[in-house]
Image 1 (cartoon, rainbow, N blue to C red):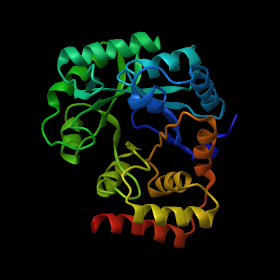
Image 2: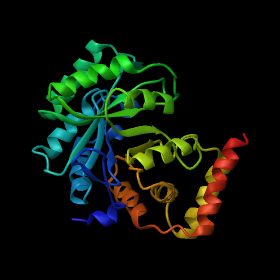
Image 3: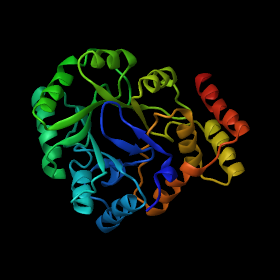
Length: 295
């Protein structure tokens, strides 16, 4: 098994006993196209999950609305009974319509149903971490998150949820949440091109709270991709490896969950942990965000 150091080091979530290797696995790509229905090759999906654990990954990010339920079913089939150190993080607050649409599902009934669906399909007595997913499709939306958060707090008191995180939130919403309960992690849209959360990440780092960026290689213009491609060429690496390595260098509280349906790409992603980024390369990569902000 790979050592923890080869997965970007470790990060201990605040006020918990959970220590995560900094590179985990995101299960969003396990289901079929549009994150809907079964995978094209179920055997390959199961083999991928087993390989992830064999390589030292101890942090899997999922949601009952991936599939729906497909990701969770595959995780259970491949990994149950779970290794003692495996942390399964799931999300609630969203659902899927019959037309494959993504829809907010933040009522008390929706949230309780989603928590029980995760527990049942994953065969868990309690969920390690639940991220409350709010806002729109990618976009942040200001507004109080007190009501749905208090539903999760109630489920924590019942022993069904151990820890609570947030997804797709603004700093103001995070501050509101912190006034209600302990928050152990935040999951937001962030990458080398989309750096609106720079200051937010620094605030969370000071508090020792984990930050998990999603879409680590999403939303690039052709010009930005050219910059990243050139950095990858110089380092004899893939653009994804460079983007992930940059995130690991960005702050010690950043936890990665790159998703893939390929064992080859899984191994490549883990290679980011040992990729050195010389100062001149980092400076060049930093210009990607400048390009983004000027358009």
